[in-house]
Length: 474
RNA sequence: GCGCCUCUAGCUCAAUUGGCAGAGCAUCGGACUCUUAAUCCGCAGGUUCUGGGUUCAAGUCCCAGGGGGCGUACCA
Image (cartoon, rainbow, N blue to C red; front, side):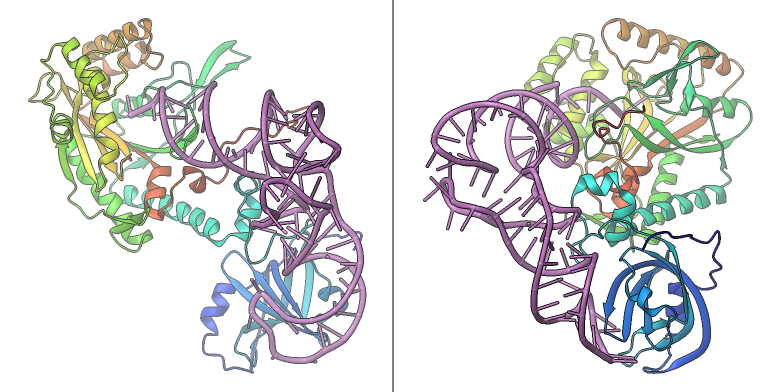
C-alpha cells in the first residue's frame, strides 16, 4: 500500500447505533434518501466480485457497508482493505435485499491502518497475556471485554451522580504522602529530588479526607487510585480504585443504609436487577442486608464463644486449633479478627454487614458506644469478598495519639503493616472533627460483583503485569 | 516468596508410546453483483518461549531460565 497520509480531522455525522434505531422500519431492498458519514474499524469483509460487503464498527455498534463496483470510488483499493483498518465512509442509508441495514459506500477514506494480522474473527483472542498487554486489541476482538469495561465506566459515572444527588462533593487529595496512613498495607516508596525527601504512594486517602471535614466540607468523597505493595491475585491488583467518603453528623448505621442503597441501585441499573450471579450462584442484593457482629459470626461458624475478656494465650490456642497462624505480637483483638477471617469470611455468600470490630485492629475507628474494646466498624461482605470498610470515626485527638502509639509499638514488634504515628493528623483533630462516618468501597470489586466477573484483571483496563524482558527504559 | 499447570504459524487449536510439525481463520494470488464467521480454487507461512542434556530420533522425556494462569502466603 505504501505511504498513507491520514487526514487531520474527519467530520462524522452519525453513529451505527443511531442508524439502527432511526432506520428500523426501512424496508428490505430499499434506499433511504438520507446520506450519512460514519467512521470506525473494518472488522469483516465479504467480497462478491463486483460487490463487496464490510462490517464497520464504531464506538456504538456494528453496521454493514455495501460497496458495488459500479458506484464505489477507488473500488479496487476498497476491496483490498485490511481487517482492522479505520475508515471514514459517506453514503446513502439503505437496507439490502436480505434485510441488513447498510451504508452504501459512495465515498470513503482510510483514516488509519492496522498493520498486523487481525486476530481470528470468530474465536477472537483468548491468550490472557495478549489481552492484558495489548488491551486495545482485546477491546476490538472480544465483545465481553469491551462491554465489561464500558460497564465499569458507566457504573462509576452513576455512582458519582448518586453521591452528588445526596449532597456529597467530589475532591482530590494528594497521592504522594510523606507518611503512608489510613490503612494497614505496605506502601510503594519514591523520592522527590527537589525536596530531597522520601514520599509514599498513598495506600488510602482517608486521613486527608477527614482533614477536609475538619475544614468544613461536611460531605466529601474521592474516587481514589490507591497503591499497595502486595501480591497479585484474582482479587488484588497493586493499584486499584477506592471510593472513600466522609459524612459529618452521621454514624455507621446511617452509612450501612447508604451502602445498601448505592449497591442495590447500581445493580438495578447495570446488572438488570438486584439479583446478580457469580460462579453460577445467585446473590440477592436487595436491602436490607443482614447486620451481625463479628463475635456472633464466629460463634455461628465455629461454635466458639470468643470474647475480649478471654485470656490471650487461651485464645491463641483456640486460634491455632482452627488453623490460624499466630504471631507473638497478636493481642486478643487481632486473634479474633484472624479467626473470623480464617473461618467465616469466605463462607459468607449473601450480602452481610459484619459489624463491631476489635479496637486493637481498628486504630482510626471510634469506640463502640456500648461495648468496651470494640469499635463501631462494619465491612460489607458479598460472595465471601470484602466490598469495603466503614466506621464511625475516632474524633478524639488524645485517643488517636494513643492508638497511633500502640500501632508504633506493634511496628517495633514486627508488624510491618502497623501504622506509623501521624502527628500532623492528630493536630488536625485538635481543631475539631465533628461526629463523622467514613466509608471505603473497592470500585474494582464492586464492578466485579455487578458484572459477574471472577478476576480483578478483567475489570481493570491495564492490569499490572511483569514488564516484558528488555522493556526497561533506555 | 512457595507449589501446581501452561507456552506449537499473526489468531484459535491439533500432532498416538519419543518416530517426516498439521488444520481453520487471517495474509497473499485467482473466481464470484445480496453477503452475514460468505463460499470455492491455489500459494505461502515455524528458532514448537530460551539455553543445556538424554536418545539412532525430542513439540513430546530430564535440568536451568523467562512469560502467563491458578492456588498459597502477604493483603482491615
